[in-house]
Length: 207
Length: 207
DNA sequence: TCTGAACTTGACCGTATGGTCAAGTACGCT
DNA sequence: AGCGTACTTGACCATACGGTCAAGTTCAGA
Image (tube, rainbow over all chains, first blue to last red; front, top):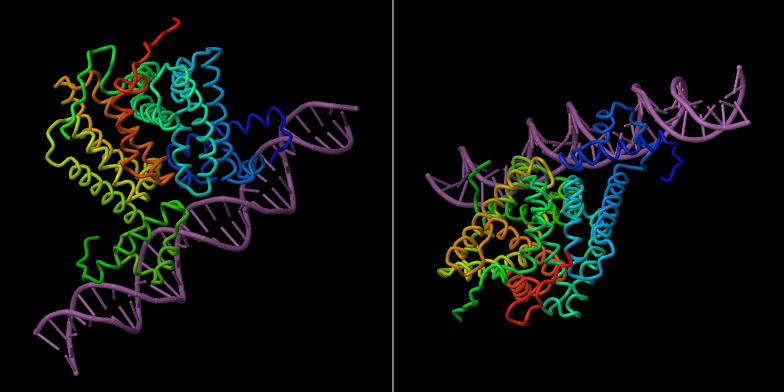
């Protein structure tokens, strides 16, 4: 679209984005009609098409800005820390705080992955997140801070734990992101068998 | 619906379920119309409504049978093993094999979670899966096999790792489920810092 | 061969949806 | 005050969708 917007226009556009984000997240993208959006804001339908080319365009805009902002939040959370493992931890904590304040975006990304027209965009964003994480893991492995292994797999596992606990604990049960981040870090660092907290029982296989 | 079906009818119903599963998974639930389904099978529209009350009914049927079958596969994989930690491992391996042969169902469940009308059903299924896992984790904790902690959180983390690696590795990259299950177990059991494979470096915090 | 239940057809219906547009209003700038 | 651009309105349109149904076909069993 790329229209020249006055501050007033900028404001309207934000209203539309915010309202649509909330409606899409709670009722689903398809079941939420454009008419419903403009009625909810008490404006005419033309307003919608003044700011967005299509419903699809609006949705992709939500995704794009969401992903961009999350990444920014992560990098801000890591600050100028240099140790890769600590950077990873700070990134996890930053993400968790971000999800707690942008709950709707989580649901929208999950939906977007399930539909052919949005999936490619989501995957692109996820490749970026994975690469950010993988690099930190690889650095930590090279430095001998963590056990060697396939950095990509490990990075995906860490993202998986963060993602699931963000959904079920932070979004689902509204638990404080700090606590949940503690749990993510604890699990990812030590696994089931644990290390420092308890003398671990050696794994015993029957075969 | 619950109609008396002849073998021929049973066959048609299965065709519809199979075709719809594939189309919903690749193009999305909403973008796939009932007309598209019956045209794809070369039958009249009435056939669809002979076997299913509505499009929504068909979709829920897919979800229900999928979840039931996965659970059955997990329990079969665990067999009569009694050690909780080994049961957990066998369950993870069984799930991974199942996902590998029922790829479409994964996508459909993820979608179902994002829409108000299907979400409750999905959550019910997930509560069951979580409870199955939580119980094993709790037993292992009680037995002292694994480190103490919040069993629910740990169970969710394990499910998260399985889920993400199933999606990205098994579904996304078509890697052998056995290998991926190895990686899941490895990560979940030892975490980043590792235990047996390498002497782990003590965690060093700056603060 | 007859009967009836299982199954199939496809034209048809009501409605809701994404999107358009001619007309009008608000407002900053000169 | 006058002008132009940013913004807003809401009736309107084409279409696609989920779902119905009267009529027809298949086929197992008597």
